[in-house]
Image (cartoon, rainbow, N blue to C red; front, side, top):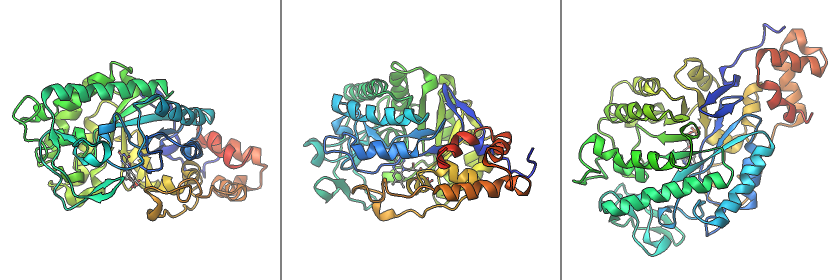
Length: 412
Ligand SMILES: Cc1cc2nc3c(=O)[nH]c(=O)nc-3n(C[C@H](O)[C@H](O)[C@H](O)COP(=O)(O)O)c2cc1C
């Protein structure tokens, strides 16, 4: 009916394991530091996630600690007590009530933590403090980084069990799956990086040994969840929190090749293109695509994507979906804005971390008038004068998932 309509790969359905997505615009995991001091999501978090839910759309929660000692920033959420499970249950119910999907990003910050949180030193593969000039962010303000406690082999098993417990509670809280946070310089990546891991036992030294902890966590989570509901996030070009990978292509090719055996729902790669200056290889785009194409599980890409670059990344076949961070913070209805090619609200960096509803649940949605005008624009000349129902039919012909997204925007 409508040859004029631009067909976007972002708005075709796909499967990430058992997760059936109607479109590929995913909410990236975003720490917002607005939970209670005992790490329980608050009513405003229910509203925040509900706002961003859409029919067949996937949300990934903010990173969520699996134990008290795993915490590295104030007012982050947890998944290790019954109160936290009850708090998350309200979030998952709200997202499901809109037909959306939500997975829990389970997290241990390792040496990013601080004794100010629990009275105990943070834990790490080796007793090496973060030395990148940063301070530790705690409930008591910015404090000097501490030398963490190097985990014994027995204690490592205990931390692995905490991940398993968090995964179990995520199921009880009604999540559709879990994403293991293996990125951004936190505990799993502290083990992977030879800058933070100088162990001489089976958890240190060779690439394989440094990846042992990661695979033990994956194995533990798979005791609680089928593999087609488990994802893992990796940051191959990362240097966050003072980690470093001297040979990222080798390190992460080996990890991804081994992960292939697990048939996970997805691998979530923070795209090295967003961190081009950090990658010690000449061809960054090659690193990104090579790693994505190595995975036999679907790959979610993230980092500095815009509507057109995201659509091209999905169309290329390398990425199954794209996670959006900053734009999704500022645009609760980001999928429908991308569908319509509508303008985006700008984000306010000053309200990213901590605070109240301001900069959290008060970003405006498209108005009904804006959505109607946007629809008329994209259906083109031929259908512009047709009644709304015909315009929707034209859109449905072109974009299989569009109507489920746009109907709420039109308040139908
Ligand atoms: C405020 C903020 C909080 C973030 N918190 C997390 C987090 O909890 N877990 C995580 O894996 N990444 C986190 N990230 C990284 C984002 O998931 C994403 O990779 C990054 O924002 C780049 O995507 P973008 O360019 O679309 O914003 C955070 C980013 C921002 C801006």
